[in-house]
Length: 136
Image (cartoon, rainbow, N blue to C red; front, side):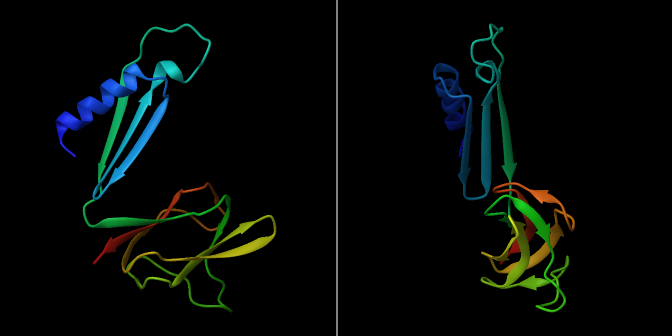
């Protein structure tokens, strides 16, 4: 995505009633937030649109598909995934406990685990990044 396209998105965002817009393209994420729209009904001076661009390069993320509590795989099931481990598509990497139900989370990607972004027992939100993976 080029700078001109980003400028057009900012203008559209300022002219619209949207408060937030996220766009993901291959290798880039853009998040636009229009501050004056975050508090409807409250008079405020115009706030510039905040732009966050993340160049992901060769990295992808395994994210949480639901809200719950992060837990590593139990020793009885399979060994836990650690930084430096190689994961395959479909391989279980952790579980998320939600309302007393255990949901096994599988990798959507092949690659090397670069970083585990949450700790045992952390509360996680929908689409929160759990694992940073260097993709093939």
